[in-house]
Length: 406
Picture 1 (tube, rainbow, N blue to C red):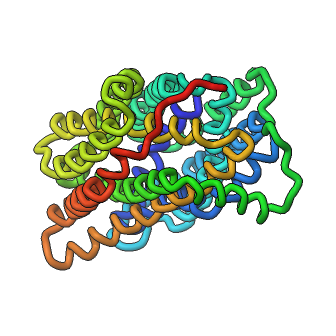
Picture 2 (cartoon, rainbow, N blue to C red):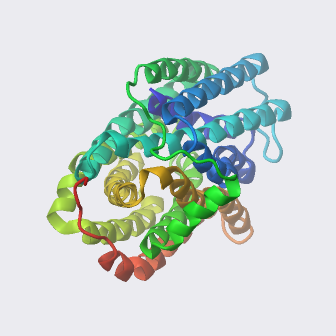
Picture 3 (cartoon, rainbow, N blue to C red):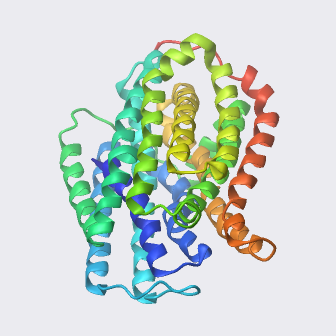
């Protein structure tokens, strides 16, 4: 339910920003508002996750997101019809900044909610089946997050602007009710009574004592920075260079989701066949190739095929890295170590989004608008190629054999 709502929001947040302004930097502020909380609240979220019942934390955060989406929908409804998009500034500053505020609340709740959700899984699944569980879980999530959600969001925003926000509010409210039905105890195995500083120090000490986990965090952080550059650039590239509307854009994202779903389903078998080391190496290389191909896709159909391959390899990488992390970190430390890891990994996302807008702005000073919109893809491809070269040897020898639960 929540990932279907997230999938709707993938299109809606940035697309409605593009209806208020054509400034790529201002458009980038909307997804930045969603990702910035990862940098600000990742560490507190880890401490909270290791102190409270993780199921209760998920429930509270879903209610908070439902409230924020309801407020965003009300703001859009009250502002109809929208003023024309401005080339600089925004057509409706009050609406733009109200939506930014709602996006910040949604992003903050997501930090706490996702950390708790990822921490719960090892309590439900034997360690030797984490790859299979993560792969299948992400495939189900992708059905909503990237397949049905973007297409539905594009259809709704092209029909009545405020309906995607209203529907998301309902989805998160229903999800909160479903969380209530999850049976079992999900409190940490060891209660914490120290200060926040000492608790975070304990988590940092564990992560620092496992260098390969640090390597994975750095790789994930750099890759996320490059990925977010492409995510925001893709919207304007599709609109202006390929002349594709909201519904077509949603379908392109949905096609990529099909690749991700397939990757999640076969991830465990791929890892079993070629090993964790080779899977991580080749999936990282594949992302560099995909970044390079995206701006040169001549039409929406070709771009969709590139995204299919991109999402397929990305899901296999996620399955390998996250399963290794869940298996390697003790339950009583999982929330804190996870949060520090995610601060390093996800904290780079706002930088990537900001860079995307800045690169387009700077490029417009020396090349035409259509070429400037392709610049973030080229920069991401170069960055991913360097990342692959530097990470190849550590990934080839860092993973340990999969062991069952003791």
